[in-house]
Image (cartoon, rainbow, N blue to C red):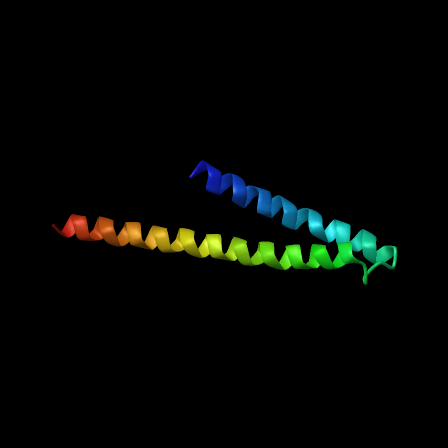
Length: 74
């Protein structure tokens, strides 16, 4: 679980840093550069992975809750 949390925190930190780098490149007129495009792809990929992690966590919580309710009924 700790590895999952570390990865998640790293993704969040990256998502907070990317807009700053993108803004710097925009100000330099480098919106067509490879680096700008890499950052945009990273931003979208990170967002999708974060959403996947959130979905997995929610699914696990629901599964745990259902299991607990079922056990309680027994």
